[in-house]
Image (cartoon, rainbow, N blue to C red):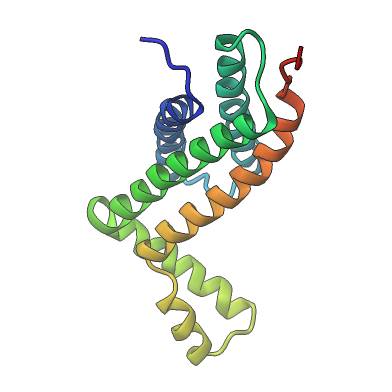
Length: 165
């Protein structure tokens, strides 16, 4: 089955990127490398690849042409789908699979807040916004915004307009 519409290409690659992102997240959680610089760079490179690949695929399926708008559409869909999937994984993992791991993270975060000089009342307010549900929303919205911004750049580079005549 050939995937030719920007929506279908975006959905297809968004699911694959979402699953890849989940695998990377699980690896970083299990190895306690969430704050590792190399992992952050790897995540960025994977994201760029999963924006370039579907645009290049769409371009190859359309006689070598892709408009900026088609590229943005593909990139936006990839970003939305993958951000939702990876955010949902975070929610399920910390709420249902490993709530103790979340408590460990919350305790480390609490310690960093104390070191930063936050008082108990400020910490309690901040903890209300530090839940797996908020992490899901943050991952979804943050991933979507960053993905759309990165799609602007990738779509501008990859685009090749059909000649009018």
